[in-house]
Amino acid sequence: MRILQHLSRSLAVIVLALGFGSVHAQDIKVAYHVNSGVETAAAILGNVRNHLNADATAKIVVVTHGAGIDFLLDGAKDSKGREFSGMVSDLAGKGVQFRVCNNTLTSRNIDANKVSMEAKIVPSGVSEIARLQAKEGFVYLKP
Amino acid sequence: MRILQHLSRSLAVIVLALGFGSVHAQDIKVAYHVNSGVETAAAILGNVRNHLNADATAKIVVVTHGAGIDFLLDGAKDSKGREFSGMVSDLAGKGVQFRVCNNTLTSRNIDANKVSMEAKIVPSGVSEIARLQAKEGFVYLKP
Amino acid sequence: MRILQHLSRSLAVIVLALGFGSVHAQDIKVAYHVNSGVETAAAILGNVRNHLNADATAKIVVVTHGAGIDFLLDGAKDSKGREFSGMVSDLAGKGVQFRVCNNTLTSRNIDANKVSMEAKIVPSGVSEIARLQAKEGFVYLKP
Image 1: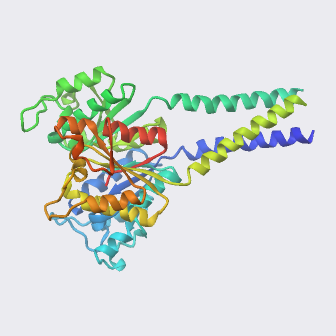
Image 2 (image 1 turned 90 degrees about the horizontal axis):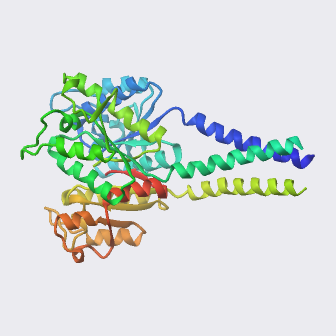
Image 3 (image 1 turned 180 degrees about the vertical axis):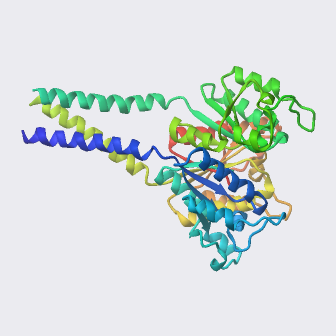
């Protein structure tokens, strides 16, 4: 009977694993990829806000590199004078995460202190976007 | 022997489940994300046509929002005077689906009657793109 | 006892299959989608280089179509006179693969001999990008 118990337990583990897989899959996780400049930021933040309005449980991570980091720098404004810190704080309060590429900070000589308190610095924006998809079950969206 | 039968049946279910997973995966499903304006529409529709020519069983859904909806509005033309309704109908006849973001219609004050009969209106373009990937096995492509 | 042995073997196969799944998943595979012109090539190749610096085991395939193939044509330069063949060879030496869309070559009347020796020609760039994701476990990134 011990082999039966063993088999039974193995089956239970597999079934649980498959089950938990589908539980985890219920909330949609989305990586927003942003490398376009500050003039596109208002529309992009509007996309994220609309996304959450349509799907309140979506987990959204906005990964920025290149010119895409600019709206997350202190005092960022577009040519219409629109500031982004309020919208960023508001979205962060709803669970949206913002990430900034350290390679970009280095190559553009930008001090890490200039980056918004709401954002986390990651070593590489592009590898972070790939990692979120390959390892953490995120889907991709480039606004 | 009942426990053996039970185990055997459980195993069969798991194996079948894994098997069906790979059967469903055979036809490739692709979400085309379009948020660029009418000047890019001819090239994008050309990409979709070429995609189908290369892979006739591909299931393609074109999800539009922002300026991306314009080629699906009645009488849409680009600056060269090219109309899109013929190409859209042709692709729809081959199984391509077109979806238009209702948030965009609302924010731009566009009447739903102006949207092509070939397109379906969805509440949010961005959440639709995420949903197709996370829940329906679509891959992503931004032309 | 034969049924027990059979069950036990079936379980072992399933557990192995699940296990091998996770082994294969360890190296991240990324399809870079490029359809923007030669002026964007230096930044894109820099993204790929930074990606490999951050994740040396990443398998990167750069799939090009439309204007995106231009940096892979013989003698390609941007408006600053920067050539790309050295950077392409360097990345190819690190395992990066480059693919060029044959539909683009045909529609633009470009001879296949003009394509870099480092690149492979595929029938359709867009269907290749979908195939890599749907069939070979690649994630997507559009730089």
